[in-house]
Length: 369
Ligand code: G6P
Image (cartoon, rainbow, N blue to C red; front, side):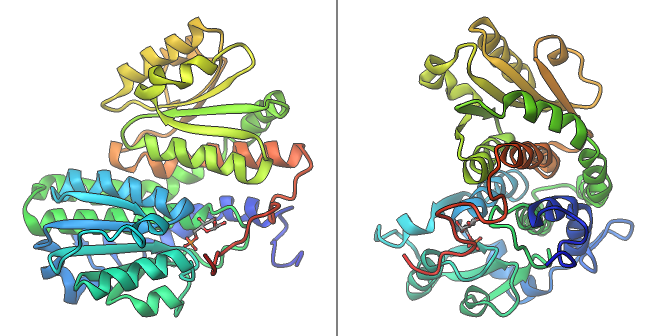
């Protein structure tokens, strides 16, 4: 096992650190920005159907569902097709309205999640086309779908998903760009620019990972907190959910992720000097608004940990701690902003003496209902 961990103390830490490579592996042979090429083999025969879909339904569980939420923003922004993101466990029992005009994307690391598999069977029985985004080759979900793209992140052993999440987003981003280009909803120039930017992500993830020591210090300060709030907007809203889930899963600290603007409708009541609030406040279209949410938390003496874009000075003056990540296109920010949140939950859990790779009551894949 020590050999498998490759010198790391835990699989989770190894998998967090593998992300520059796993994202590159996921894009290898598919993305060639210089020549404007983007090829997803599994999509080829279904591109026409995908392009003409009236609606995209994304179904998944857990962290994969969070990747699906990021994909909702991606598909709607680039391809202008309406998207619904569904918890597989709800979708399967809701008698949902599905037709042959729907394109269903099922996301699953293991490819064995019982609820996701059942949601696929239901959608299939109504005539929809099902596309799988799985990590495990030959898994049940990969076999049950009409077509799919593997995430090629390599085996993920830690129960808390890390590198599978960023690989899922990478595949979904490529799908959204391809679809947008085919449909003419993004210009050639923008498409080329986005491909080139996507290609830089592995090296930017590498840079983001270097913040580890700083995050460890922050972890030490907050390891005894009983609650955490994670807030983000737009593309960073799913990241807030994912950051909170990571912390809950492995450190057993109660954490909630919320869209930053919804704070005023509830969570703001929880804020006092005991409450750490993690803001994802990168320079994007909702930056100014998130900054005013930070002010509101500060006014109530909440402790602020902010993930910001490199060079940010505004938030630095307001937050107790800032974590600076490289700049990228807004649509790709989740691939970078989730990294410090993975590290934060990891270090807090280790400091609390938790079993990071196998947290209590959780399973790597849930093959029963
Ligand atoms: C379990 C795991 C999570 C995972 C979820 C969905 O709850 O502990 O890490 O996100 O199942 O699994 P899947 O394999 O379908 O992505």
